[in-house]
Image 1 (spheres, rainbow, N blue to C red):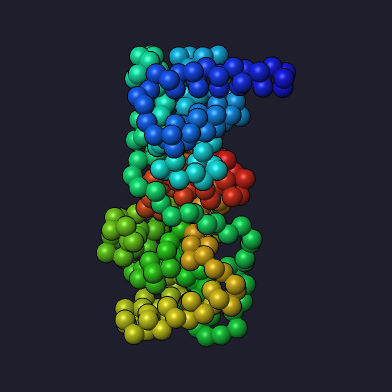
Image 2: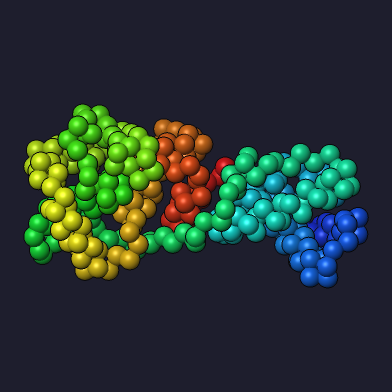
Length: 283
């Protein structure tokens, strides 16, 4: 079976490379890169069970799986766009009937983001801190860990944004300048909110100088716990929220909820985090 798959890949690769001659002439460097890209595409199609007999038989669903494979391996958007651009050139030049999805449909539009770094080692957000005000610092960690907030959003959270059934991150404090809503799905979230609303000094947090000092203490606590990524607990939230929501929702709906809650216009970072925790999406 493995031998058959290898032969099919070799035949498909040969078929692709033969089609290169149909493209307009370009520099030696470009021609060499095109050959490398097509060989890689063929190998990745084989890995994702999307390898057709001939180029003209390539299916859109195989391209979706191919791009998802690239995303899991954290290829840059530019690389993905270039490889798909090569397939589109072949498709147009050869007049083959392949419906290649657009970059927008494949969620690889825009510029290449910086590499997404995800910390996997578990650090307990409930562990005692040996300096004052430990409770306020821990609340920042827990607002990130339980609700996916950014640190500055946790610092700026107002009492009017805390509701019985959900948390609202208003646009005036939201990092992406949009209102976000996070529903309480677990008992852990509900228990924390009860303690938080009873004990948190919202009025004191209005003082800019106090917030500045607390920001410095938060950074100190991060260094003491050896947390290098500012969104460490936020990434933990993505993992835990995915597992919780997946019990009652499909992956597409879960991804949509996470994007809304976290303020992401794209799913790239969510996918990177889930991949880091071996929770790979099938879509």
